[in-house]
Amino acid sequence: MILGALVPRPDWQEAWADVESPGPFPDQRPYEAELWETLVEYRDPKSDDILGSQRVPGVLFRILKDGSFATRDIRGPGFPFVTLYTRAGSSTTGL
Image (cartoon, rainbow, N blue to C red):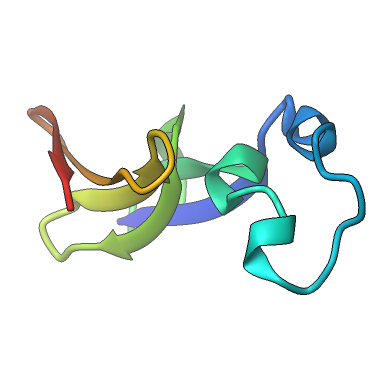
């Protein structure tokens, strides 16, 4: 079984450094991937023991039935990327 959660990035406070007055509009706030990263845990479905865990960059948005998962991230203004993590590795695709 795979579980995923968003956790604050260690440097999340730095993302607010250039924001003069945070407001409700998206262009006045840091992009979510500057504030959050994904924590993924693989667990034994019977005992609930943690088999492994890892933090990965980007924001988790999909866990697939085969145990792979996808994150999204921005790599510069207007450059969204989706990364698909599988047990064999990862693959990044620009949107």
